[in-house]
Length: 546
Image 1: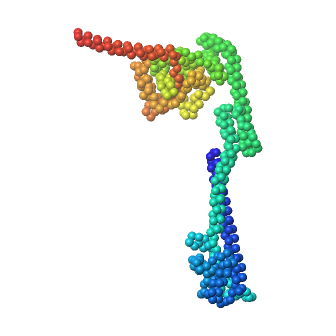
Image 2: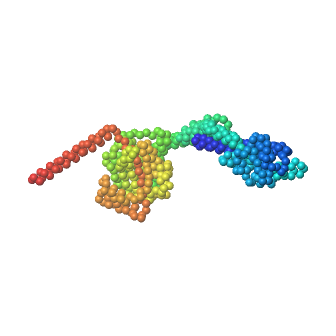
Image 3: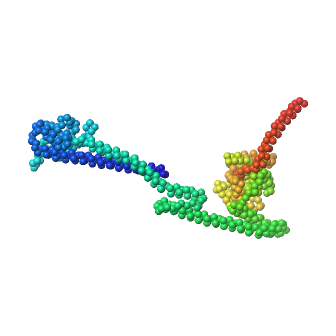
């Protein structure tokens, strides 16, 4: 912007200077020529009138020549031509006058009563030719037939105007330089507050709500800075109010959840006793007892989830990380909840990473439980590693074969208390009463606590993946066939969508000891492979010898 201001200022100065120069040159040239013309006409008129008083008409050649010479002496020895009918006399016989006195001027002098003049260029030089008729001094001022022409040299006037133009041109350069300096100063004065305002705005956008601009002066820029400060003050006040309300809300949730734990513990004990004795109670009372037990358990889990969410909000959640076998962790999670027979797995063995096993268990339980409740079988869990430009990652994919998630539901699936029941089935819900709407939010927070994330998408076609997974990780024979058949039913060609796919991505972090052990195992494995190959060759030779 500084460059544009300077260029604009300099261009405006150049245009102004050029315009002023052109106008000054025109006016000066006109004034010089007008003065020369007036002086030439006045001198010729006065001298011709004075000499004509003693001139007899009709003249002869000699008297006409004497008349021209006397007139020339009185006007600075300029060439003078006197004409009377066919007689022509020149004051200076060496002067060439034929090319300078034009026929138009002679005709104008013959037909007119006043002095006439004409500027002509002869041999590249400017001249002023003045002509006038000589009239009798009586009352009717009749024409005497005598005509007088004087030739004035305009080279001096031309040189004067040219010198004036050169002086003006020479003055343009310092004027432009001065204009550029003034433009730089003006641009700095204008742009300095703008740059400060830009820095403050960027700081405000980056989260520095205390960013302000010093207000100086009473111009428009000062008003703009004052308005910015007022806006920043209002934004900071609103942010502080929102933070305070958010903190109060988190404290309220945490306090309510904490206060509910004691009565919920008592209610859980009573509900457990009632459920144990439900078979001895009347049918209606037994059904009510079981309902109370299920809802109490659901309420207990909701309170625990709320307390976990409040710890995330308060930044009080921490990792208890240790090197963990992730495949074994996934199997333990499925076995603990009785999902081993309902989930097909494809787990890469030997995948070890530094994670919080409890939190990984929570993530897997939420993802798999969500697929079992809202999707359709088969549910497939895949564990693998993925190398990328930003390092190695562990990917855990949970895919079901239900109706999938619409785009709007995918955008909100990790929101708290959000349920996409309208888009997904409820037929696979377990009897535990889960489904508070906090499980996916807690899973995502746990993933972020590890430095990872969870992504959700609809599988374009899971049939091929299911066929591949059917023979993996202990899924073979009839189980593999039934799995493939299930995939065919849920994702046939031209059939309904192939379900939702949730992908957990965690950075693959290992301890230094684990990395050394893995390198040792790779080295020793290579040695054992070579030894086995050599033994095999030897056995073949012995067999051939026998």
